[in-house]
Length: 151
Image 1: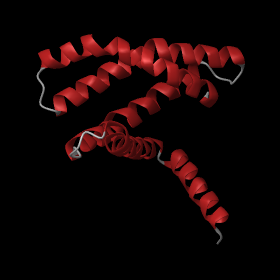
Image 2 (image 1 turned 90 degrees about the vertical axis):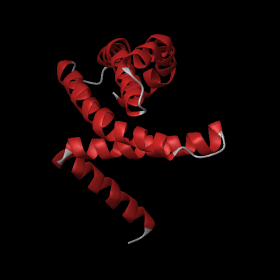
Image 3 (image 1 turned 30 degrees about the vertical axis):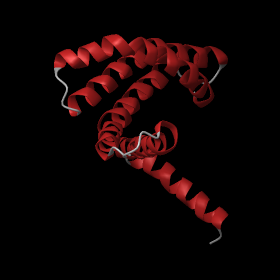
Image 4 (image 1 turned 120 degrees about the vertical axis):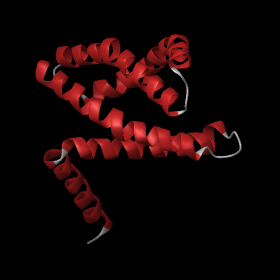
């Protein structure tokens, strides 16, 4: 078929997998997103010289093992607790996401990345203490808008 049909076929297949195997599909989607994001960050944003493949592997595994799976659980629970897409429901979901899930996600992220990098509990705790608030507030400026559209 033509490119338009192929694209629609891929989108339909992806949506079918979201229905038939949501956890694996979301884990793989998150893994791909984290992988591509880190490749872009290292090559075009940070430009620190030598590419850190182990960082990409750590981020990809975080996406697969933690982000995709816990996101499936949390957002599924949130949608069941607050059904609908009206302004009040969306505002409530975004608020809960930013106040509750965002800091929890930050702790999971910094902990996973630290421990998989070989850092000990004290170093991980110091990283969380030092950087969590910056991550939460920075994330809120981007993801609050994205979630408002998505919810």
